[in-house]
Image (cartoon, rainbow, N blue to C red; front, side):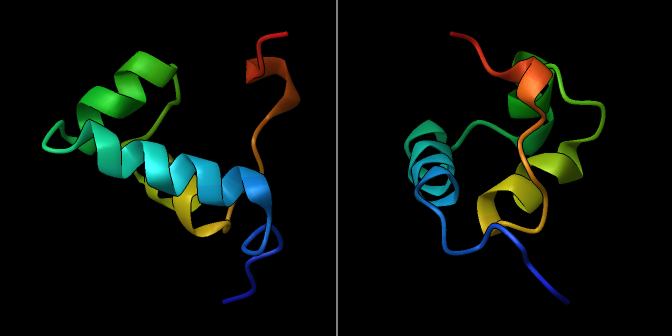
Length: 58
């Protein structure tokens, strides 16, 4: 599977933040991040999905 964002600083940051939030479930993380599916949390962590720009706060 191609992971277009796997080697980015953002993917690394998200992966570290997810580890800090453990033992919180991916369902809770997805709800808090307002993403439609808990699987998206994992996809963002591995770089398999791009972060939608409309979800980024300035």
